[in-house]
Each structure stands twice: as structure tokens, then as C-alpha cells.
Amino acid sequence: MSKETIHVGLIGTGAIGGLHADNLMRRTLGTRVVAVMDIDPERANAVAAACDGARVHADAGDLITDPAVDAILIASTDRTHADFAIACIEAGKPALCEKPLAMTVADAERVLRAELTAGRRLVQVGFMREYDLAHRDIYDLLHGGVIGAALKFRSVHINPRFIRELTIDSVITNSLIHDIHSARWIMGEEISSAYVQWVPTDPASPLSARLAEIQVTFESGAIGSLEYNGDSGYGYEVTVEVTGETGSARTASHPSPSLRQAGMASRAITPSWPERFAQAYRDEVQAWIDAIGNNEASGPSVWDGYLSLVVAEACIRSAEAGTPQFANAGERPSMYQ
Ligand code: ISE
Image 1 (cartoon, rainbow, N blue to C red):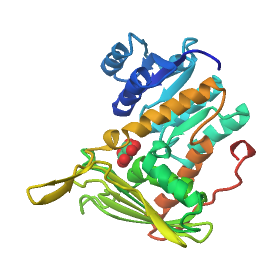
Image 2 (cartoon, rainbow, N blue to C red):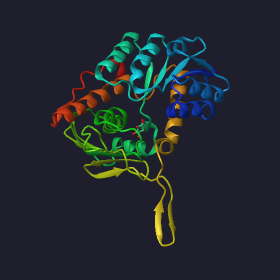
Image 3 (spheres, protein in one colour):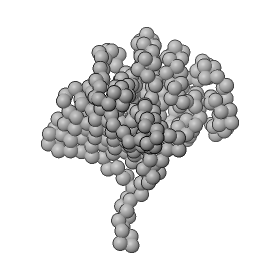
Image 4 (spheres, rainbow, N blue to C red):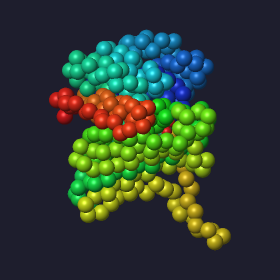
């Protein structure tokens, strides 16, 4: 699409939708938001006003097919992502779909089939950690051969405090889905099995999850652990470490400077994900817009979104069974090589 300015329609104007709108309007070259939709009209109107009077649609389908809209950013509630992604594919319009791509493998397969039928990649999935410099450093060290073959992957994902109580299933599909993708992306190979353990937020609600850990094995025989804390009470941190044959690489999880004062050494810890990944979100949407302008696909694909759900469902089965469960990646279609 060789256009000066890519006109984006935004579905979902909550926390992440509002952040994307602000980035698209104020920090991204070659684009503007021309239409928004949200089930909360007040929220939609407020974001539309902040987007120089973008059109407000009451229906997502109308926004997707609006001739003034070139591309769609899907930031609505998780359970709506698959249907909206399919609608964008059927409209022949590129989309950036926030994670997760779907809530189930079956729904992710519907998106995959729609894109394979379309014969071209149209949907990028919002695994923004691929644009985080700390994560890219780990990727570059491993794939540059600096630490030898990878033997172990470890991620630690710490949320400050969740108001809404999350079950182990929703922690897996909403939060740990990031770590599942990071593990596949950085290790460059598929996860073959997963074993889930967790600590309930409330012993009276055994499916509630305050802490969780997924132990994984990779196709090469490497191992991994994906650790989650949903209620740290102190801040937000994401750390990744890869141990290789000749060394290990760990992200500097505190990008802030070290402060020494009054006999103490301290570092500020980001309060939550918008602050920790502020630059990654900007780079993610700039890469998406640039790719659209060059008629290319970029970033995490529908195949990545589908495989993250394949692993997530193996995790959910493991949580139910209390045993390790296999994740079968299947044959990668040539369109995603
Ligand atoms: C949230 O939806 C995000 O995507 C954040 O990146 C993640 O850290 C958080 O756990 C999720 O709830």
C-alpha cells in the first residue's frame, strides 16, 4: 500500500488501545487514527477526540469495512480477537492484533485457515517483547553464537498487583502467553512439553493463581522455566536468561540508573507494563506501519499466535491433569517459513 499516510481504525480504546492510539498519533511516522470503536461509547469518544476527531463506529465490522480505514489495530477484549482478525483478513486489510490471537487453539486455527485461504500474511500479533532492546540483546547473543548452543531458557514475569482475580487458565492465556512466545522466538525452536504448577491467590479458590511456573522442554532437549508473579506488591519486572554451552545471557531487568544515597544503593522499578515496554510498543507500531507501506508483513505472525495457543492449551491441560503435557507444533505452512 504505497500511501503517504496509513489510516488506522482502532477497535478497543481501553488501556492498551489508548496507548496505541497515542503512539500512532504522536510518535509514529506515516499514520494517523481515523476511526475508533469501543463497547463503551464514552471511552470511544474520548479517544476519538484525542485523535483529531476520528470517526466513532458503534460496530467493529463497520469500522473494518470503512473505506477510509486502511489498517486495523485490534485492542478489544481477548475473546473478540479471533473474530475481528478474521474479519480484517476477509476485508483484505492488514491488522495488528493484540495478544492473545485467540482464547483457544480452535479459534486460532480459524484465523490461520482464513489467512492461508487469503494466501498472504495480513495479521501481526502484538508480542511487543520482540521489539524490546533487552530481549533483542539476548536473541542476538544466542543467535550470534556468543554463548554456544542454548541449554536452558528462563523468564520471570512479575506483575505489580491485579485488581481482578485471575484463574490459572487466564494467567496462561493473558500473561504467560508473552513468555511462551519469548521462549519460542529467542530459542528459535518449538516447545515440546509443559508442566504447570501454581500457588492460588486464595486457598478457598484453588484455580486462582498468584504465582505460577511452567517447566518446559524444547525440541532440541533444552529445558526452560517460565515464572509468573501476579501480585508482587512492589512493581513490574520482566527478566529473561538463556544458558548456553559457553556462557549465559540475562537481560538487565532494571533499565533505570542505580542511585546511591544515605548509605543505600537503589534502583527504581517500573510500576507496570506500559512504562517497562514504552519504547517496545512504539517500535512495534512503527515497524507495522512501515511494513504496510512497503506491502510487506512483519513481526510475530498468525502462526506464532497459533503456536502460542497450542503451548498454552498444553499448559491448561497440565494444570488440570497435574502432569506434563505434550504440545504438537505440526507442520509450519510455507507462507510462514
Ligand atoms: C497484560 O495484558 C500485558 O500484555 C502485559 O504485557 C503483561 O505483563 C501482563 O501480565 C498482561 O496482563
